[in-house]
Length: 446
Length: 143
Image 1 (spheres, chains in turn purple, blue):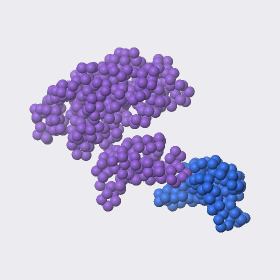
Image 2 (cartoon, chains in turn red, brown):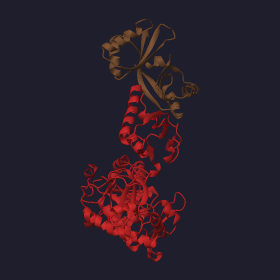
Image 3 (cartoon, rainbow over the protein chains, first blue to last red):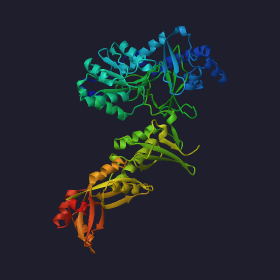
Image 4 (cartoon, rainbow over the protein chains, first blue to last red):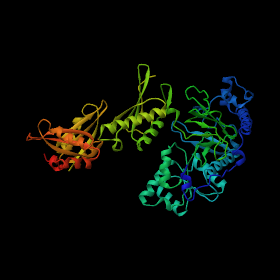
């Protein structure tokens, strides 16, 4: 993307933290993956009762995994399995070998507990160093970490990765935006680590203070821990005058660092010498062909304390195995497009509310409130998108108003692959609730 | 020469028009002229009122989507070919009409036609060059 060159102190695209492992050719990579997969399978088969039960249910022996294509024979692991084995049931090493414990926020019920051996922490630190380098961070940088330090993996993951690179780390933690900005100005932070929404909160505060973002030393943002759109990226980049990069991770697999963007910014490299990704149909569990959109499933192949076989991430994305211009050979995953929980199947086509948001944003540059109504008329599904009118999309002339509706409908059809009927409604006619679930009314009663 | 008009987005369901007239009436806003363009789903209500800013404010406060547009009002004799004479001038001058509506003045001798044009300035030029009586906004608001 051109913006990289436009910033005077733009990060260098060419740097690779671990050129040997990040640029392995496919054959070498797969040989390494198979070796590591087999040893992981043997280990969980010996040590983790949950996997022993799953294997015996499938009549599977550890020795049955002889090639990478045998991966599909393995059982899935779900968040529910982790809940049932709370707190330490999924650990594959005795607690005395565990040197760190983290936990994911438990929005429903108990949190998930994850453990790391000494070698796991080294691996984690190493893969974070990889993606931070890919995003342009060097030993010259002052890395400002505005993730909360605690049970959450975000802050510690980035912290040790940045130290490994040799950057100067400011362990700022989250909250108190005013103080964050003061430190950022005075200590001349050059790289910001936080959630993309917090970056916008900072931009708001800067604007209110009347501080010119160009007066900061900041040049790179490493944003993650929540889904965000390309539009949000553009907004952060123009308002903070930085390069905004994306990274991906989840505590069940390691934390941040499972995947990260290089400066070519055409997907996040998943470190395949440590994780094997698959894309499946979330309904049937079937592995989908290369390039399909579906649920990301990850298998850890180097972890000691908390190995995961085919963990269902519930994140929707697609994988791209073509070679990246940066020279890394590891597969790239697209920005996540939503969660499987939000997925709708309309006329057999998988549709995500985030795609509809994207279209509404693209057509008029604003994010109006909307609601999806799915009905079954005869034997046909009908998708209706109700869009609340606001001043930006209200035209006094009927011709223009109709043209707007046509434009949205055409764009939706091309993006979703299924037709949608757009209906304009008055503002405030929809309930204002947090979360996306309330934006969907499925009247099909399937 | 120009007249301020407000346009309101109305969903096609019972009671919405009545809600607009209630909100305006309670604030003492008097409607001078109106037109409604509608489809099966929604309509666009266009009003010329005696207190444009107040009307806009109170409707917005009640949650309506409101926009303000400029139109022109033309006075013509209330007799056969009265409207045609104006349309003919516009046609000769190659001025495109976006929409229009009309009402008859209280005295009954003249009709007032409200026009929305793509190019307002050009329309005013063409009309005044042909000695058409373009009414100032105040005339309409105070009718």
